[in-house]
Amino acid sequence: MVSMHSMPTGRADAEARRLARANAEVRISRPGDAEAEADADALYWDRIPVGERAAFVWHLSVELYGISNPETPVESGLSRF
Image (tube, rainbow, N blue to C red):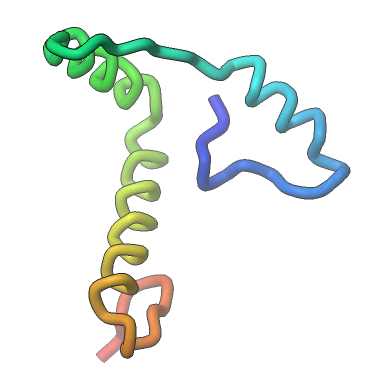
């Protein structure tokens, strides 16, 4: 499975993008079917290795920090004191 944050770019990576689309999954949720939607979400995240999930959470955390603190430059990685 190719994750969003590791999606290749450029002409040379067209085959990798094609494979990612081939493994794409579509899910239709109907209003009032919250349990089925939660089960599908859990299955989706269970298929992603823990390391990739952690990297995704870190990326989202950095983005949210940047949104909530627009005057502070966002640096990737851990701060050093």
